[in-house]
Length: 420
Ligand code: PMP
Image (cartoon, rainbow, N blue to C red; front, side, top):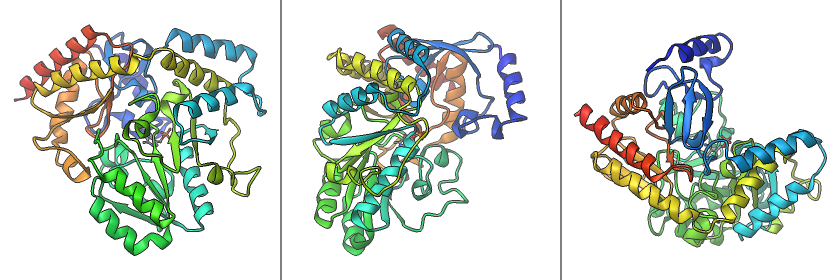
């Protein structure tokens, strides 16, 4: 495997960009080695500066459910760019996208488009605080909701990867962190503190400590208790929205949150995210209400065009989630036969290097991350690009073929047996 091009690009980046990357996990520090620099990608394949090709199971961390450079998305973005890249004035495409999202997720009566999942979660909390006139927020250990201060506590994802679960510089006095999948602890905490609690925010299927599905009764308890105490329930569906099903995790589980945050897939690979939910809550937003939130590039026409193109493709193909699930199941079998613990929901999956079940951050953190790093590097050398951290989800896209999955499973088995 040639690496000269990527290494030179990384050295150059290090002179101008902290750590050489614009988002920490990209730097490969958790798995060792230098990051690959990408030249181009198409479908399920990624090519680096040295011409190496990789079967991609990162999918830009979730957005690319149709694979890279899908022709419909490229065409939509190109056409939109010709009409102008940004206006700072409304366009009908924004309403098209809002209507499509509402039709998929019935708990969303009104929504606002923003540019990142961080912004969506931060704004949803501001709104919850204004609505309830309380300041507190409950989050769960190992869940990530972007890098706004109140959420950057025991935050899974890159923060967990680098052993800095709570970043210096963060003020999070109003945040209470509880264990995921533990309804009893949650009930006790609410009994004591509900008067302070504006919101409970949760990933309905956790994806940032690796994939951890909710155990029966956990999300149900969050819904009952928040309703009883006038605290708003926020489902962070930045990963799961349009990933685990057309209507997100909430339609599969059958629980309606008060607010939902979305990102990744709804932007088709461009910077776009959203938050929405109850009409009475969302109506508090400026300009109709007093809660301020704004963005120069919010509802950007290129991002909206990409998101619309991707969602319309998903909507037009009712069998797509079943197909993705089948591909995911085959990949799961392949990894399982290599002797790791696999958690999977549809097309999102993690192979944990631990022998026990993984149901929360405590069990996830027992993983042998050094072994994962060796495994990652072997897979990479064999042309399979996995997330460069044990605590991230891998994603299957509709661009993966059965043959691609077989190939990944075969390499996974070889990589694992080489480690034992
Ligand atoms: N919430 C969840 C569940 C996420 O996985 C992420 C990003 N991985 C975010 C929020 C933040 O999104 P962004 O990176 O777009 O700010």
